[in-house]
Length: 232
Picture 1: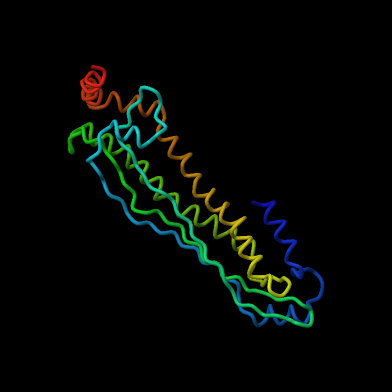
Picture 2: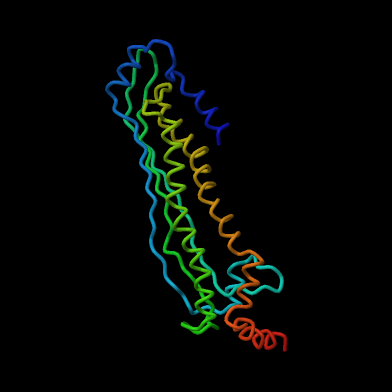
């Protein structure tokens, strides 16, 4: 990300420096208006689904260890959208133009689905234990979004610093869009994906072992006949 942004910076031919401002730079910086980065994170709530069996949940997860069954699952998909625009001023005499970037970033979680295997009766001890485990996953997603929002907002502010960007006439908008597509979009998606490491830490071997022993072994007692049925 840093390397790509550094290369992009070289494309802005008249970037602000310690040198005195040209008349065109002064006109851009004083009249074109402020750059603007708008970033919003959107939560869309969650629902609990008790209609799917543990075998299907195991397939849905796709990364279960051999011999391990998935009794609950929390699923969502992070989405990132970026709209790019900005006011332009051109200077035919120099052949350059400036743009005050207007960047709108939207981070979204569609409604999160919390599955608890249909083999567990709602309200039972085992059901409540599995649900509590899945609530840890849910809360991790909900708590993470404001954190990544703050990191991305700070990075955008540092990059654009409230000043216009410069390029040859006819190129500023395309260069800005290229920076967003090749630099900012991958960076933001990578930041959003980091939540999965936190989710994996919740599903530790110790946690699975604990769930197998809760409620007087109710989970194991429920799965044992189902496993025998599968083997027969």
